[in-house]
Image (cartoon, rainbow over all chains, first blue to last red; front, side):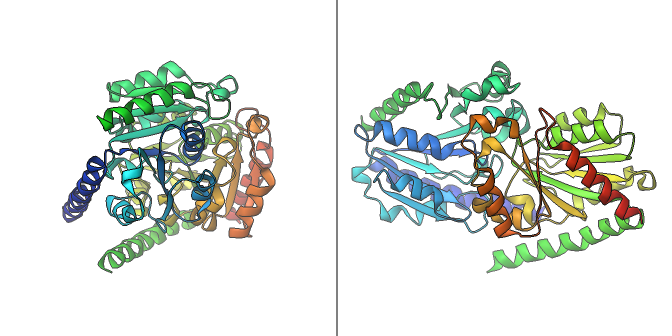
Length: 219
Length: 219
């Protein structure tokens, strides 16, 4: 019983800080996403593709969450946009306080789209609000089509599902319809994109949608 | 500070229970592995392949760890061997106590190889001893070759690294040498296997090694 109470308190404290983060984003009309997936599904690749294609239309800034190393932040830094690496030092997800602790380093008046790339983990990040507007969960074809039923919470709590590496479909027995059906059973409001960061297929729809969200936020 | 102390106590309590599990395995000369990876790297597929090939030579039993669903246990049950599904109900890894709570359902006098398949997660299972003899971490080609440097603890604490889905090498930019070099830098004692559960490539070496470990245990 104690254990549950501690965890509830942790989540409640997180929620309060997330709300403060959200106020900062809202006040500055910054559209913010929390990007989550297993290790290696392609979060950073999607970011690279997105920044490369939209950097002249949107002012983008990024938080990179990782256990250690600055590898992902280095990949993003090449595009010459504001990026901070949060190293969780072993912790399995970002929390609102970690995000809050680096927000001072951004000038949100000059940011349209703020992407928080979470630690690679399909379990733990699911329960932690960071103050984002939308939660984007990504799965990739080689991971198999059973991820929604096996890790339902993260799909339940997300707004957007991105299915990446569709270029690998011919070499696997991944069932596209099944994964979408299972995900929508868990969460009928999921907006779904099917993409390949390798070939670029499907990315245009993602870019269009992202620009729409940013312009809605500006109104 | 409190937080750290609580966590240390949890790990210490886990260690004590793991030690009791280990005594049960040792007393019965059962060779036990803790199989860990990201979601979808191929843990259950490796198990299916292993059971299918070795079921006439070794008496195998399995624990399946998952957040929810009995999907993986159902896949193993088809081989008509003892299997228990542990549903962690949201918890991101197995611990020694969860394992201890199901050991009574096995007759270890009639088991040679006991496989504990952990929850799909490259972060949290790394710190929890379950009482196993060897820890096996699996990565798959499409996850990318940066996993050892980004998630070092699990590679540091493992004895064996399995690189799966090598049939997908031609369709990715995965650098085989880099991943092995990085993993061995973290842990020079890692025994490494490169396999494809799809084509069967490399599995024979894994089977031979596994049989050797079982027969060492029997001595």
